[in-house]
Image (cartoon, rainbow, N blue to C red; front, side):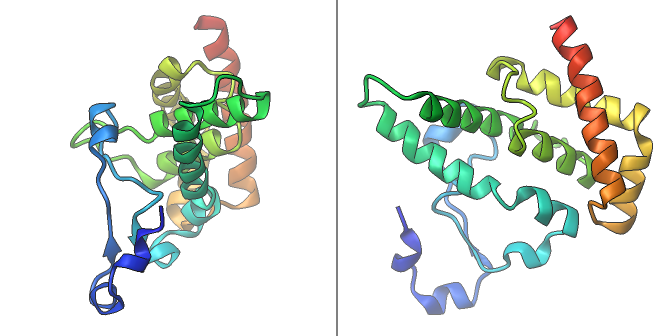
Length: 181
């Protein structure tokens, strides 16, 4: 799985990295269909805001582990509960990263959605409802917790106050979502 060894260093040194697109991901409806497990970045976290760095640090690792587990689980008949949970979280992470064409999200909304996915707030949301949940969560935070967006957009960091507002917002919205879903 590590293709970085096959890319000559002089090629990487004149680029910011290599992204690998996957036809399997594309056919599964994931767009952009970037395979994070084998893509290489030389820019890395230096180009990210502090807030994004804080929440997205584990995303690449979790998605890469999910890809490996998904491939392995095709041949396994019995999966333990931990493996099933990891596969389910990977599916949700993949789902929350889907984005319609020409629909950029403000950085604070990206941070909120990734935070919710990576910290287990969506673990009991059915995969097919993740998209609806994330749209609703973004709307809820925009209207009910506008200070969260102001803090993150203004200072580009996920401060303790912003994280507290985000946790409250996710919990409040999730309650109403689960009742209505």
